[in-house]
Length: 257
Ligand SMILES: Nc1nc2c(ncn2[C@@H]2O[C@H](COP(=O)(O)OP(=O)(O)OP(=O)(O)O)[C@@H](O)[C@H]2O)c(=O)[nH]1
Ligand SMILES: [Mg+2]
Image (cartoon, rainbow, N blue to C red):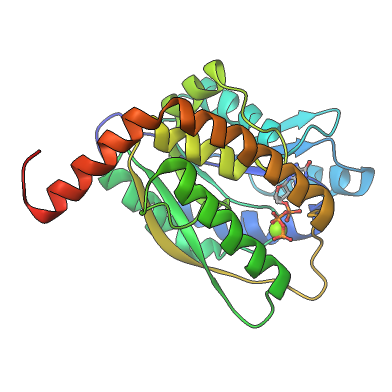
């Protein structure tokens, strides 16, 4: 890791108290601070989280009294990360769907490429619902369009390592979606800022007893609204994005513009 780099983890938690314990346990081997943002969860999760905080001393609790959405919860985690002096954070869901064993590799990639966001794309098993797989394809096609970046292979999966400062600055200047459109919105905007994105696979499972808060109609409408705004943003940035695309193509062909 580069001198001065300090890594940690952010877990936004909304009513995933039962699954969160195993996630934290798996991450403890990293020996890093684990910021857990309780996004106004119910009494049961609140109680289970108290037990987790007592058992795992690397956890750093943050509580939002009112449920505010994953994006808002993540930003509360970023504010705490800055307070702790962290420079890079791994974002991982609390529901145990992401393979936490990949965390060490993603963090080592971040240490090797500290300016980049280390992003993931999912490797599903048969437990993944077809509707979610299909929805993801559509969303990712739009992500390529609004960034004009063929490299933008996956915009929805919230298993990533972010450099803290660029993300914090982005929140100061942009209105990033506070709910289910958050993972897309933040990545597209970081890509617009020319922050490098590096993608690696991560296994994603959908356990039969898993709790998902994703509501197909409501959240797909939300995501469509986020993309509508991002399309407008893309049109405003079109000259810059086109220049970048041409430069990248030329570089790949080994010619100079
Ligand atoms: N949905 C939702 N999740 C939140 C919220 N606040 C924090 N989270 C956390 O964000 C993560 C993703 O939530 P999920 O409900 O699993 O949504 P998802 O992973 O996009 O949807 P699935 O693919 O169906 O599991 C989990 O760690 C939640 O606990 C919130 O207000 N709504
Ligand atoms: Mg989930």
